[in-house]
Length: 472
Image 1 (spheres, helix red, strand yellow):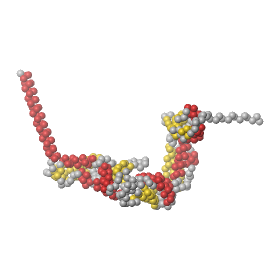
Image 2 (tube, rainbow, N blue to C red):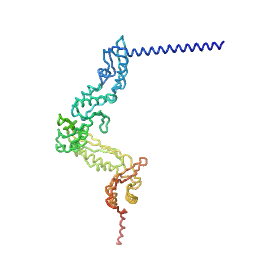
Image 3 (cartoon, helix red, strand yellow):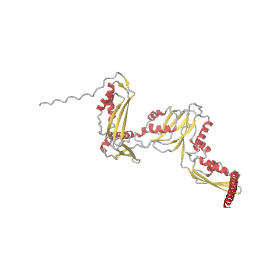
Image 4 (tube, helix red, strand yellow):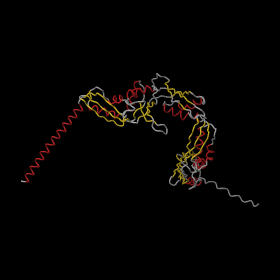
């Protein structure tokens, strides 16, 4: 009997479970249908409230989202709008909630703005002013604000497309590209847009503001720009490295060039080349003299020896060429004494009122290295043996990195000439071992050209016999 009850119980449980599962499935299906219906039902968007804004306005966010006030809107539309904001790159996070009252929908959007935004620079858009280019981005890029654009997401491609369309509207050549820009030794500070594939040769360079350097000297220094394809960044770099030294070597340490101005020589030109004239305005400032030169951080080499190598004294014009040469000479002294990683860091403190420059020369000596081994590659064994015997630095000697050049010019080159080898490429490959503080040196000859049949290698000339003592 109990066996029967067990079977009956199992049958009842199975029927109950199946019925419960059917009911549960029906409830879930009805809920999904209701949710889908609610998501697709048309509500009237009565308000959008955005919090967390600093760089952007609420109007920018609403326009970028695609939402329209007082228009039929579904919850699916709201979800799509939030996803659109997230893809823009303007925000680190976007969250939302909504309220319905009857057929009215209110959306509350909370954002965290991205800090990853950069100013836009226009490198070679010589047909347009910066204001016109900014306006093109304002019209097309929702989150272009205060001259900046988000670096991630879709905003940068939107900016590129806006500038490309501006070119196309004027039937101008080239493809717009962009890349992050960082000054030498600095962090990324801007997003540079440029036109690739357009011929914009520089035909003339004019200067203004010059007094202490003649116009001819400036024109001579600017010759390297003539014929180059125009790039605002390249002109700026050339002015800093190729023209500004004319002022620095005369002690005008505050001299600076304003951003270059560029103009089309023929505004109606249809190409294929668009010739331009560049104008550079300089502010020369005052001439500075040295007030003092102070060494610090040096222990192995005395300040007096470094000062002698530096070769400048107080009250001289602060000629940066001579200062750089003095720094180089000081480093050479360290290099000749085994301090091959030594650095000398100059720092100028300018007294504008007195027009004086006090220089602090900070020495980073590093460890002292010793000679390891020297090997010669690209020569036969006999010549290599002769060269090794003439190499004066022995294992364990203080390593002199300046000695290598002397050896090449005074020993290696004459020996190669005796062998009839002309114009070889000589490379030196010092390999310092920081754990042993030693340097192994490899001197290699590549692509030697035989100008004549090789002469027999010669041993170094024997030392003359010692003089016989005078019996007197």
